[in-house]
Length: 262
Image (cartoon, rainbow, N blue to C red; front, side, top):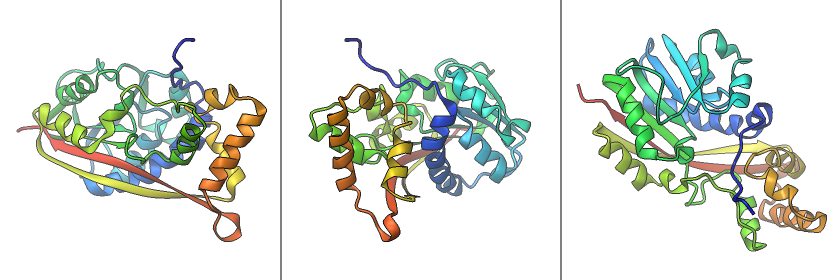
């Protein structure tokens, strides 16, 4: 059987699952970056535009260009209020369609582990940012238990199933991120972790939203009804409900930033 891949073919479903998480982590990330207003930004792997919209809401940018390979994700991004300022176009993180030094800041939000050659993606961000500009990313710590759906992944493994991971999950490790940034010749490289929490009304809301994730849907769809119920029950046991049945989940991302040499 051909190896399954994570496919982003439903922008609205992705937004409901990961867009919310992206904004939660993105708020902390932008607090850390503390950018001045009026910058020209590129959002590499912009997806549904969740982070691009955050940039516009919080950072008073002069320009925002969003690049993503998925037309389904871009179609959703273009429906956002952010589309009044941001431009969203199809493109490859390893071959950005812009000249050298066009931007003041290049960002990847929850993307670097999807880039086939992460070092090449970082090199492209470096290429399109001018002297003194910022190059930064944050990504779920996929191998360190930071993914927000970690409880589902853990239960899958307990059942002998293999969770569907991005092509390069190791790129999200803190030491790997630091190595990529220093290797790209960036100055003042700093790292930090970002932990955020999301509340769900109850387990059923958590489960329904989680099933829309493109890395969950194909695996669960292939299970027998009995195994699907066993998985659900196991995940429920891993996520004890709080007051009024609410479920709180955590996500932990690793972040890195660096400055272009002047």
